[in-house]
Length: 40
Image 1 (cartoon, one colour):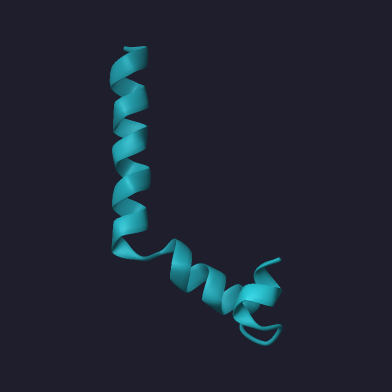
Image 2 (cartoon, one colour):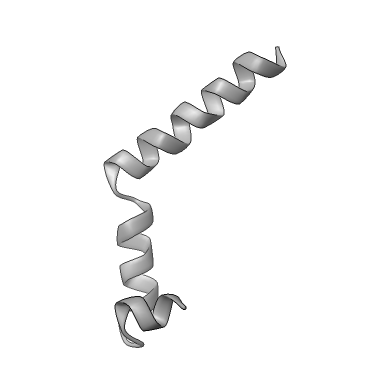
């Protein structure tokens, strides 16, 4: 569970900080571009 990883008090904040790391956003955007290019 996320609360086990980040602690109950900071579970949501920690998850958001993890999800919005620049490399995570870059990977998600890159995957979206790949899918769009494959579907076109």
